[in-house]
Image (tube, rainbow, N blue to C red; front, side):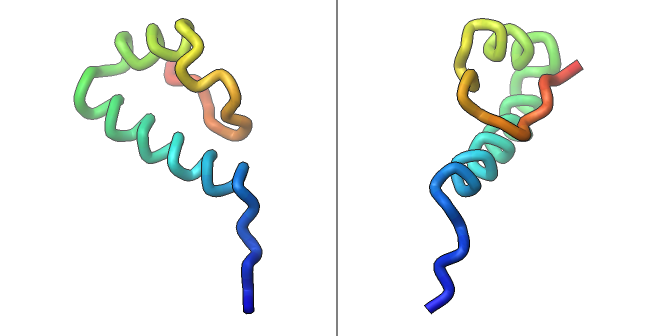
Length: 50
């Protein structure tokens, strides 16, 4: 039984996917605004969009 993913890893991956979808849908400025509002405040490894 290989259960190697911790919850934080999965969460980072999900946040990364969310970021990509938001980037496509809203554009860079709005995604950065969401980041500044603290939507992805606890997501280590997710780069801020610039």
